[in-house]
Amino acid sequence: MNILLTGGAGYIGSHTAVVLTEAGHNVIILDNFCNSDRSVLERLKQILQKDLICIEGDVRNTDLLTQALQEHKIDAVIHFAGLKAVGESVTMPVEYYANNVQGTISLLEAMKVSNIKNLVFSSSATVYGDPQYLPIDENHPTSATNAYGRSKLHIEEMLKDVANSDPAWKIICLRYFNPVGAHESGFIGEDPNGIPNNLVPYIAQVAVGKLPKLNVYGNDYPTLDGTGVRDYIHVMDLAEGHLAALNYVADHSGWIAINLGTGKGYSVLEMIEAFEGASGNKIPFNIVTRRVGDIASCYSTAEKASQLLSWQAKRSIQDMCSSGYKWQNYRSTLA
Ligand code: NAD
Ligand code: UD1
Image (cartoon, rainbow, N blue to C red):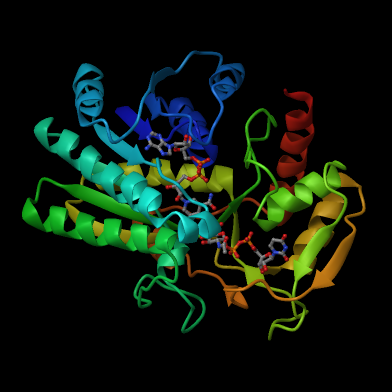
């Protein structure tokens, strides 16, 4: 199949590009590089031993998208492009709605006029808000506490309406839990701007000596060791989940939401220990007060994905930490 990856130069998109290409699909990336670097294309080439087609542009440019869809005879789209920093979304809600919601409307317009109606959308576990029960299944009520989460919820609702309007649409919303780790080559990985907000990129930078110490946000949660628990999923497992979703979407019309997680949570202290094991380096940390807005525990049930997509995460937290460490070391050698 010819598959368009909007935001395909980013963290999850680039790993998915590898998995899809290796599965024999023809991948076309469309990205405006607002949160990625053009050098990722060269690094993808090192992994795949071939050039991927990349169109530089914004998903809000409907004409450009329409041209890309038609010229490359696209069969399905995976829509990764969007802004994703929770804190930033609170101070820049207009930019978040414009990019995420308006970007999706533009994509839907281009797909509609091009009669391409197979779509996989990058949603997030953030649409579940504060968990009312664990593990979280897809029937858990949805809500949002910030503009980022609300943009994902709005898009999901919009996609439901679109699917209801015409049975030709085949739409799947993948609700990712906490993607971490990197491709085993270490050539691609998560590359946040500035100081990382998220745990694993932060630990990785401490492990290579780029940052001195980790702050652990609270050890008084009602969890096994008092620190926050999350469902970390290896980005390569997540990428393979997209391949499975594409196969599913090819012959299921309508709208569906599916969790992509492992079904198991790990605490902050467990992640530190795993990273120390993978890197052989000590991760110094301080326990500090809780981060505002954080929840104690969040993990998924992965049953729907297993039943409908015949997919489940295979890689361990050791794999997540060792690949993340390998990438962080390689990243330190880049400009
Ligand atoms: P990322 O920032 O690494 O990748 C997003 C890519 O989209 C970047 O390359 C960026 O340049 C591009 N982009 C952004 N706006 C664009 C626009 N208007 N036009 C064209 N390109 C644009 O993020 P990621 O971690 O790879 O996330 C991909 C998707 O998955 C996002 O939609 C994100 O909200 C969602 N998601 C991510 C996580 C996570 O923890 N990484 C969790 C849940 C959901
Ligand atoms: C974050 C996002 C969430 C997104 C998810 C996906 C925020 C507020 N939320 O949530 O919307 O869906 O990533 O990956 O950004 N921690 C520390 N020290 C740190 C960083 C984090 O102790 O320096 C702890 C946190 O308190 C939490 C755990 O590590 O218990 C994981 O944090 P993080 O990686 O930011 O992920 P989420 O909180 O799940």
